[in-house]
Length: 261
Image 1 (cartoon, one colour):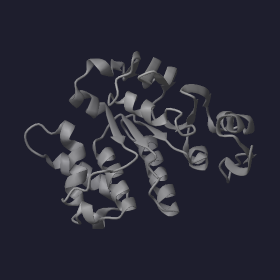
Image 2 (spheres, one colour):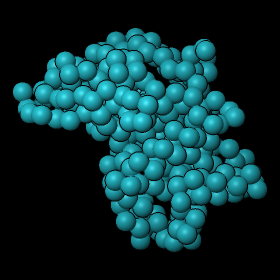
Image 3 (spheres, one colour):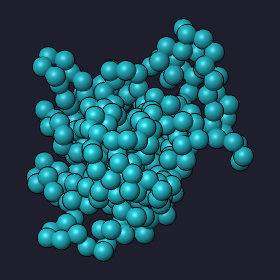
């Protein structure tokens, strides 16, 4: 299976502070990829470099063989959608219209029936039908987060980027949202992939096909959860002693923190 997204020799700095240093990786269609790492490891910065919010000092990002630095913002937005870590805006508009904003890269003159259908499908996917005509600014933090995720899905990208997408969600909605994203990229007739930055190693272990473990701006390890989430890697990166229960047919890989090292 060919690569879907390619990152070659990517580096990014804030002044003299080198945040990402010579990052190289590729992902395939229909992969659910998690980025793990401690605070300051470069997870959010990497996501922002992948969709051109931040221009890297060096390196290339290619999606479907397109170097994103050569594309205009509309073309990039057709390939990539982004869910930020924090929703700062409280739009005084209906939820349906917020999700409809995800269709903006595809709208030329008028909103089409296909655009409305994509919005309705995204709302249904995350059980938000009853919220469609509620005011976005009157929702709870977790409800707003689900709406922004639905907006990113309605954008219909090839690559869905999500930064801590479950941070404001209760446990049931954390699992439900990740399950829906997993189903979306697995069953889509058109190839899609998702890249999720998260602190939740159990969520990453349960849903990921591939994990990137960042440490001090570099990739310390990458591969399937069983290869990356080892006691040694977790101790080296996070400074904690962790018990790992192996994956079985009925249970995913699970991690339990024993003590801080």
